[in-house]
Length: 419
Ligand SMILES: [Zn+2]
Image 1 (cartoon, rainbow, N blue to C red):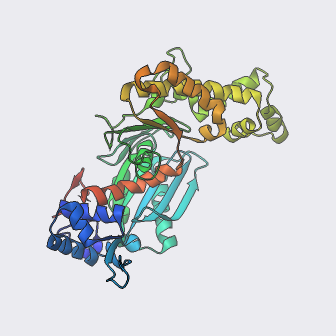
Image 2 (cartoon, rainbow, N blue to C red):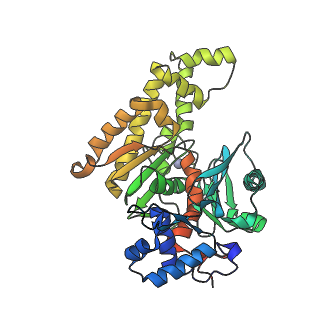
Image 3 (cartoon, protein in one colour):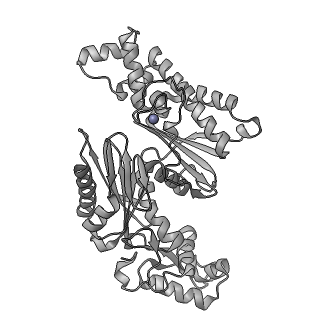
């Protein structure tokens, strides 16, 4: 199975030079052959021959540039032929499966979201992943051999090497063979990683993490996770579970967490934890606008209600969010002390809804708890990509292989260079 199904042969693509040139055209295009030769220090004939192969494989196209002098010859420039091939990204969350198809410049051409109302079984979840892929292919009328790869950002514990979802703490499903299932269904190479790590990858390519070698993404939703970029590489740890900040203990006498332990950060600061703290307040008779909403509509308390109440300035809800900010501040301060990133990127609806009510105590705790020498230099920002970053990062797993290693995938464990 190769990255470029239509060329038939993969010769040359395996060479590092070819990958390097392709990546230069992606980053600097439109660019001339002469400029590429200058940048790579390769001889013009070598550049010419490699570019020829890239044009033959339809990955790169020529266009006429502007001449530098009046009446001078117009230079031939090279750019990525973005819609010659496609990549598919899937964000597999507990409550939604978001599937997109994108061109080689990372632009999404079609997006499909499937909301999961009831928790699916393992087989149902696999079917939902497959349905998403089928839908984006059908909608855009794209043939499978035009897709270079499928990247999956899956919630929970993931083994990227085997392409398995080891454990979904919210769905209580173990060992979903995502790579194997999707590859046998579509005959397209599949890469799988944890969703917050794909978010970190997206941030490093398109978002707040661009041109930064050391940063951390903290994502808060139903659960809490972090994606760690260390020296320009996503850090996965020995057992692929690095970044599980949600299950670090904030208080050993604290409430029970989804994972079975007590007092995890997730049990204090996730959306589920916020809902249960607001519920507790309602039981204790705290005055809040949410009381009226629930009585009027006879509906269950949702996180959307909490966010709406915050927007309306509900004092009780703002108090809960302020407290949440302090818990998250402790977690971020710990991350900063351990990893010394230059930036922390916060992702989650809670940061939009909480605004400064949540961010001020968060930043205050960081200032107090992280070491003085560098805490002032760490910038704390909210993600512009938001939840979409998970699915963008998912297809970027494939683009990264294409542009930085030139490696192709096999159905076995790990990667090998074709040929
Ligand atoms: Zn836990």
